[in-house]
Amino acid sequence: MSLKKRIIPCLDIKDGRTVKGINFVGLRDAGDPVELAKQYAAQGADELCFLDITATIEKRDTLVPLVREIAAVLNIPFTVGGGINDVALAKEIIKAGADKIAINSAAVKRPELISELAAELGSQCIVVAVDTKHSQESEDLADSKRKPSESTPTDFRLRGNKVYVAGGRVETELETISWCQEIERLGAGEILLTSMDHDGTKNGFALELTDAISRKLSIPIIASGGGGTSAHFADLFKDTEASAGLAASIFHFGELPVPELKKQLAAAGVAVRN
Image (cartoon, rainbow, N blue to C red; front, side, top):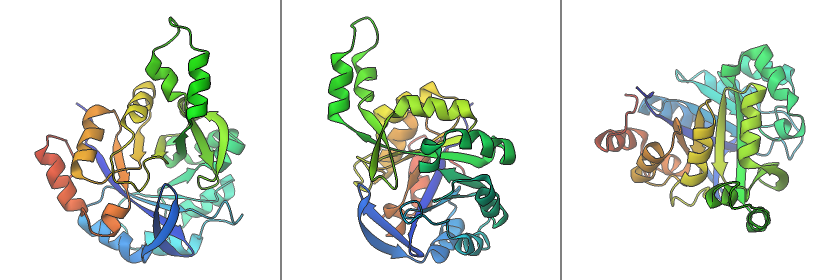
């Protein structure tokens, strides 16, 4: 029997405030993170994700005092990411009240950090965030090298997805599926997969890519980017092996409260936590 699916609101933090944009740009204020955290815990969110989205760009540590303040009002698991690039800071954030830490740019820069964190804190505490965007140039290049017997066209089309770092500002040479497989091998306990193409659009999740990754890996995949209706979440959970759906704006702006989303998912036959 499969585990019940998780619903996770995400707090993207900039200058101590919750913000939300579209395709990683055009940020607008979405409220006080402490008040939102308290609200989501009361509504029955399964977990909460806090991402200090400019920590890496500004070359500073995550806002530890804010982590401590948010953790004080929560009774649900709490993941924190942004600017974490060594074991010492990760331990400080866990000490401040986080249940898990999320890394992204630092993992791409130095992949062995994943193993170091897992050894020190346990794999269950380590989430690697993967920001991915489709590149037509990369897809065309992969397709030009494809041998008819080597793989399916879908596999090659998905090779057009590249990993981005620095808050989605910098494209890397990493191919998304291969990087996710490497993340699992290095000992991470979970992957937060964000489709930059779908982010903030509320047009649905990146089902094809999420499905491919969630079926290839044995660790849980949190899907992010594009959730706008309960039908989008239902499609995610029915058409992929993702274990959780993460969203921001639909929750922050009251478009689809967590209790209503869970009610509609249950009616659609999706097993969710009460």
